[in-house]
Image (cartoon, rainbow, N blue to C red):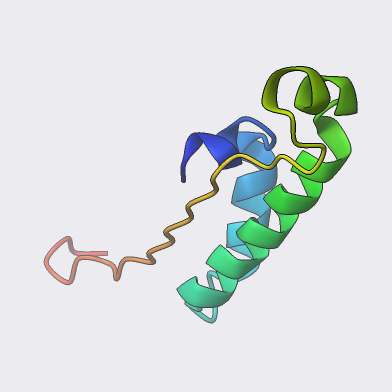
Length: 79
């Protein structure tokens, strides 16, 4: 994820969101859920005065990029 994700969410909250999709291996849904959660966090956490003073935009949300990939177990690992 980009800094727009990491600035407003913790590793734990990201892991919890992605973990909901691990069994189904639905990476697209996990990424969309992360996008929605981080957008909401930006709207709640970024002080309005910061946006007005420095960015001249009261609806500022940093760029958010999410990429989720679920890897298959290594068939040669013996597990």
